[in-house]
Image 1 (tube, one colour):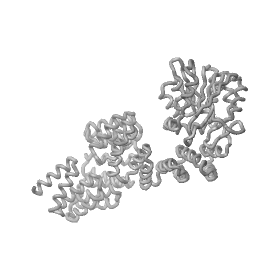
Image 2: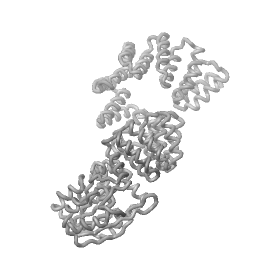
Image 3: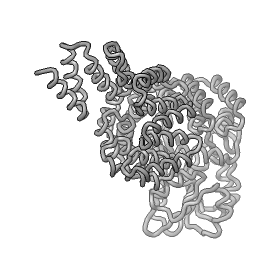
Image 4: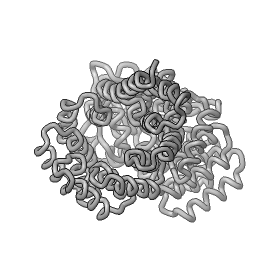
Length: 587
């Protein structure tokens, strides 16, 4: 086949996005014409389209050696240099391109984009204005000029873009960026409006499809989000954001096989992308593939060593592997980078408890040092008190923060530790009629166990996130956020319940005298973890209060509970061993 026919065939494949086929033909031509600048240029554009910019740069330089007076070669080279982070070198080549072709508006537009990336905003604006001097109807340059105001004056950028959209009814770019700016403002109605307009003008735009996917996620419409991300990825196989969101959604649906194929594809496309390694590692961790997850987290931390979430996630795996001391170092590193993230404090506290059982002396020193450096941290306060057996009376703030952070994984953890107290209460209580008050209702497991057609249940908890989970059960007439002692003191006389339940909640209170006084006259059901030594109650190393059976008996007697039934119960498992407690019914 002749050179011209081969070249036309390659161009057709190239224009249709069949890059591998186009590349194969271009290379076939190079075998007979190894220094042809046009073919070298087209091969560079293929590499550029595939995101392989180092290869593209090499090809453009070769083409320039053969055709040093050809302005488009410098322009193409500049684009790949900028994409590789070589902005200054890219600007040098754009200057060479403009020297050869001073009337090419695209050169000044690209120059403006690079200057904008370098935060040299006034110079970027001058470049866009120069492009517009050459063509006052150059919509792309007008849009880019508008975007130079997005960071300092987003309202001005929006007005500018709206004018462009009105002036150019067929312009997709201005509508796309209006969508992104409104999305950043969380004005999802206007974001949706401009995204739909852009999509109608160009249904094949992967960027617009990607934004429609993000908007669908905001609307909790996962099916549409998946469809848009899939479409965006099909339009542009190198759209990392579309592929990544699709893989993340599949991970959320536990479709790990499909998700993993996409993550591996992304590692080929974008091996230095931090989010790809991080999300793939998260998926591997969910499957308990700890060594593989650890490898991916460590790859992520090489890319971004300042990332608090990665330090935390590596710490979680090391904790699971019982490497507590190294895990603590990583958790403290994460907390130092983001002291407001309570999840990191909770991980430190949990790991310190495990480390304490392995090396008490060192764990106490670490806890004391933590409290010294962060005296207002409620988790540091609590873990230090736990190790010393000190009392922290009804630490509501600690419980609220703990369970707000714990809510999403609460029932998964309970299943892992064989938590069966709701079922035990249901077996002993039978079909309860009337009104039940569920103190410390958590995610609603007790309410779910006790609900029948003849009763109504009121749940009380300090954690808003737990109450949200409980609401999803659909078994509560009312859910109240608040301290259970204060609730009982103010509301029980008004409600006149038929049963008050406190399942596995007294361990977060300490002094029970005010609660039992408020429960006087009620029929109650509650559980305790037993203190096997002298004293009324004591904080154990895990941060929960244990109670002496004699202390409970004394409080019940003092408050008129004459009829008391007591049952042995397994509350949960810790370290593979049963944690024994007592379940009381009293009236």
